[in-house]
Image (cartoon, rainbow, N blue to C red; front, side):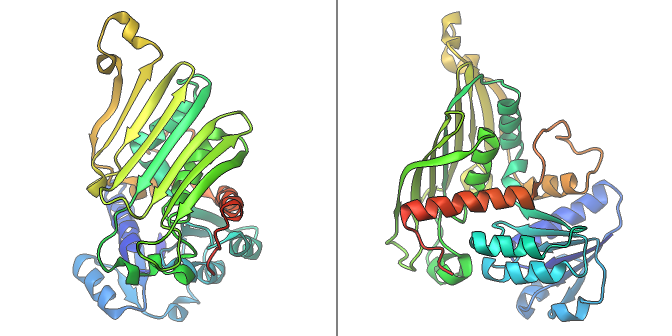
Length: 343
């Protein structure tokens, strides 16, 4: 399989590491090429990976690739996706699919009918989150009443100079990155139209013009209340999803690394009536999961490999239609909160 990764930064290297592990685990032969304009970055990749390297995408425009993974800053992704349609039938764009709905729809309208376009919303493939999503689909919690979601990045001194905090490159702040991950998960849980009910955004620590913290209240057409927080100013990185239903609840905490290992537990309504401590009645599905394989699981599912370890999942990789739903919801929220798309 001939694979091209455009962008050799953090996420490009995550995809690269996942592909190399998959090639070993499934005895598959990959010819991988990484293209990036940054020569120092390519040198770093060369030290750690045995892959083809290049600085100019034009050199590969006559090649045909089985897959293209676009792992660049948001501002470059749309143009690169459209170019990639000429030399691959399978393209994945790391989230989001464009910096705004207009850019998203430009990508989609440029896509030939025979090209499969996916979006790198890999949170679906953390094992705890995937299990919670499937439990919600299978009615383990009963009728869902409410969902609380929190993701908080701390960032670090000097981050205001990075592209992720620059409006024109990122397309916005906490709402688009990492917030789109939570919007995607909310859409999957709701399985119904989500409507804006209230919220507030704040900017002022990094002072680069983006929204740095956003609090949202959404309600689905099937009456699920969503409380969503996305922040770039949580000095203790945190991640949590709580689903509360008529029969019970599910709680995912942690996202690996600075967020702590992931746990996932479920509980029954009024379980304490058995005379046990509430915590003792809970079922622990994950206790100390390092949460380092979401990119791996995403690609295994994309490649439709038969031994995908969560192959009984009803949750699949994000295609361009799902990616567009996320961008439509993002656009509605931006309008209601009077947040510019910054590009």
